[in-house]
Image 1 (tube, helix red, strand yellow):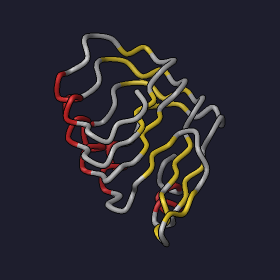
Image 2: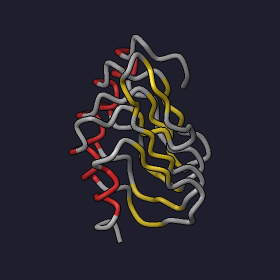
Image 3: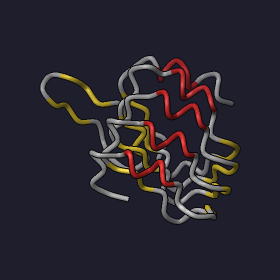
Image 4: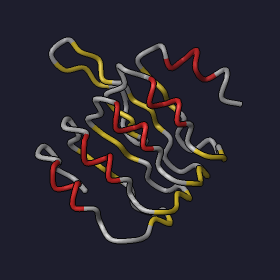
Length: 126
């Protein structure tokens, strides 16, 4: 199912909002070294000549946990709004120094917030 998607991932925009996709979030997203915005809500934007990757996965049926491989990305926005993700927020998410927005509501996440999230100095929205 995901094989055809990786053709698009070499581009600057991934828009998969509200398509009733299901399954686990592919850990292979963590290999997309230019991915700056895994925004599962916003549209593509351009700032200072740099295109921000936009992966819109809001309101699907992704389940399982948030892949720790996301922490290897220079994400500005990580929004997994309205899926069926479970478990806790990986402590590695706190290693994404560029992260400004972390939007995880309407999932089945549980447990305390890891203190590593305190490392997110640019975070404006949680």
